[in-house]
Structure formats: C-alpha cells, structure tokens
Image (tube, rainbow, N blue to C red):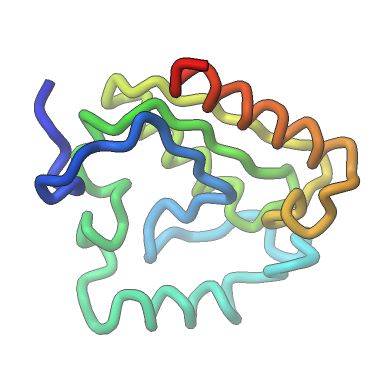
Length: 143
C-alpha cells in the first residue's frame, strides 16, 4: 500500500480517533446557532483557522487533509454530535477516508455540541462515546 504523504517518513499509527474533526480550514460550518460551544464559524473557528494557516493556502493538504490523498491512513473512528458546528466537517473527513479505502467509523450523538463528551464525562452519550472509542482501539491495537 502506498504511504500517505502526511507521515513524512515516520511510522504510521495503528489507529486514529478524530473528535469533532474540522475537514478543511476553509470548510463551511453547518448548524450555526445550535452548537452551544462554538456557536458560529464567525468567531473562534474562522480566526483559529487563519492563525493555523499562517498565510498559507487554506486548501493545502498539509493544513486541510481532506484535500489530499488519504490512502494509507490507519483505521479511524470519528466522533461528533448533531449540534456540533463541525458535524458536516466530520462527515466530510469520514467520506474522504472511506473513498480512500480506509476503515472509518462515524459516531454521531444526538443533541451533543462540539466536543461535549470531553466537557461532561458523566453524560450517558459521553460514556458511550468513550466505550466505543476504547473498543475501537482494543480491536486495532491487538487487545
């Protein structure tokens, strides 16, 4: 299998977990006003993407992997919520991984905002999300 250019000659991880993934630094966010954490792309999301890009092309695959070749990525689990401003972005990454032949699992939790599972680890959805992630890692790390 051809290695992805994103590994820069380093060993590839056995598996990835992506939590509320941003697909590209130029990606339009859906659900503005529903997410009680990020609220809308006008604030932190857009400003953060510009700082992260530091003047580089927002579609550069090194900044926005969704624009590059994802062949060779390890099995990946993606987690988001129906009120996450980055729900659409997470779906884009999931589809791009699947189109590249990568095993990818998408978890979407009802009513959860951006990275809600990190802020409230007592919520039933948070517990379920982390159990699913742990099971995914166990499967791919040989436990």
